[in-house]
Length: 261
Ligand code: ADP
Image 1 (tube, rainbow, N blue to C red):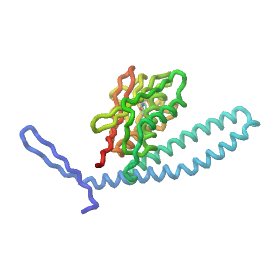
Image 2: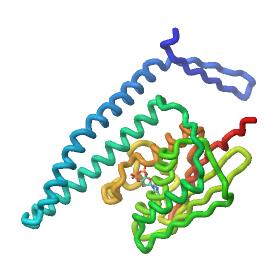
Image 3: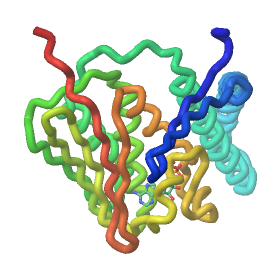
Image 4: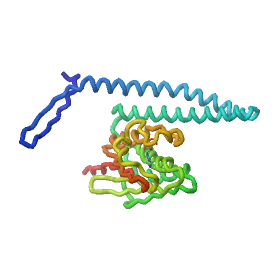
């Protein structure tokens, strides 16, 4: 029956016996599909009223000179919260598109030096004088097969995370090197670091180390989930190393493009 999904697994015991298991996971897969469709629909539906709200707020702010101070403050608050909702809706749309697996496989060639230069240049816009961001290319000409916009969003998310989760200041370095089969991009910081017990859950949607600080950092809680899915779609993986008090390293492994003879 082609509509059913079976999961096969095998376990080997010390005495040489092997157990083979077949599980029917059709119901689970259908539920997951319903969840994905629901999130995709609701995030699209949210975007239209949010665009209208943002437009009206802009008009009100443009004409706020005559308004009392408390009204101006209220307008600013409404503007900030609408921005947060916009960011959340955009990230939800992006994540549900990535999860749907309906996008064609990425085919263009992405030059890593160009990508990292743009990430560093844009990340500097959100740095204070105590944040330093630098880049080192061990090899000049490194390329991967991919979609520039998606890879930009992943690497930029990691660089901005290092800055925003270390608001007092931090040194962030972006490096790139390659092995025989992989291009490896590392985003490291010497900031607060993350307790290793959190690391396995960091790429879950809305997982945060410190929920009480979540609203002040301004993130959506979806950043690392997006990074993981972008890398997966490119045949890559994300590895995270961190030491409390010393800093964190987010390491993106991407396959080297195969040369067609
Ligand atoms: P957020 O929108 O909260 O940044 P992410 O999915 O991007 O969501 O990150 C998940 C959590 O991982 C963050 O809330 C933060 O606690 C932690 N985190 C991510 N990057 C760093 C970093 N460079 N240094 C310290 N903590 C980090």
